[in-house]
Amino acid sequence: MLVSLKTVIDMAEKGNFAIPAFNVYNIETVMGVIKAAEEERAPVIIQIYPRLILEEVGYYLCPAIVAAARKATVPVCFHLDHGPSEIAVQRALRWGATGIMYDGSVHPFEENVQNTKHIVDICETIDVPVEGELGHIGSVNDDAMDEFTSPEEAAEFVKKTNVCCLAVLIGNAHGHYKKTPKLDIERVKAIREATGGIPLVLHGGSGIPDDQVKAAIKAGIRKMNIGTDVCCAFADGTKEILDDPNRSLAVDLFMKHPIETVKKLAIEKIRLVEANGKA
Image (tube, one colour):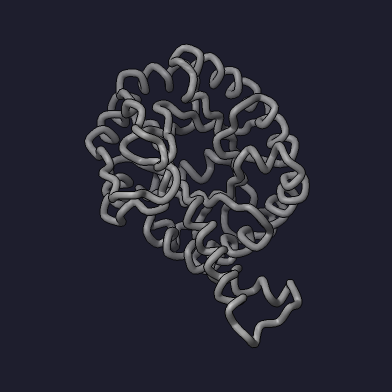
C-alpha cells in the first residue's frame, strides 16, 4: 500500500526500529525491494535520487514505483532523496512521491532553514511530509567531513521548519567506506533530547558495522538509507548471470537473478534495522 513518509516514520518511532530506505534505479531494483518487504512483512521506503527525477529515467520509473507500492500488501513510501531544488521537488510530487527530502545542507544555516521551510509549506498543501538535513553528509571520497550536526542548531532548525524527520551528520558518509566509520552515538542522543524527540535519519547506511547501526537505532535513528549496497547487489547479480554459460539471453529471464540478489540484500537490511514483522 502506498503511504506517506510520516506513516512509516511513526511506525518506527512507536516500535523503536528504523525504516530501511532503499534507493532504486530501475524496475529490477524496485522488484527486488518489494519482494523482500513482502516476504519479511516490513514497511519500507523506496527512494530515488534527483538526477533520475530530472532526467527521462524518472518519467518511466516513477509510475512503476507508485504501481508497485499500491500493489504491495505492506506499507511503502515513495520518497525523493536529496532533493536540491524546488524544481526537483515539484516534479517528484507530480509523479507521485509521498515523501520529500529537501537537502539544503550545503547552504549556511539560515538559508537552509528558509529554503527547507519553503519546501515544507509547499508539501503541506497536499499532506506530503518533508525530511530535512542539517550537517552536510558528503562522500567517502571527500578529503574531510564537515562539522557534525549541532544539537542546539538541530533544535532551532526543527522548530523553524516543521520537518517530519532530520538527516544528521554523526560520522556517516555516502558510498563504501575506506575505513570503518565510527558513529557518534552520544550525539544522536543529544540531538534527540534537544529537539524534543525528532525522528533522525542515517544516510550512508551501506557499510556501517551492524553493531553501530543497532546502537544508532536505539539512540533515535528511525530511517536508514541504503544506496551503494543496492547498486553492488544488482551489479554482482548481473555479473554472476553473465558468467553462467547456460544463461538465457532473453532479458526478462536474464534479469531474474539480479532481482534475487537485490532481494537478498534488502532482506539483510530489513532484518538489521528490525523492520521485519512490523507491517
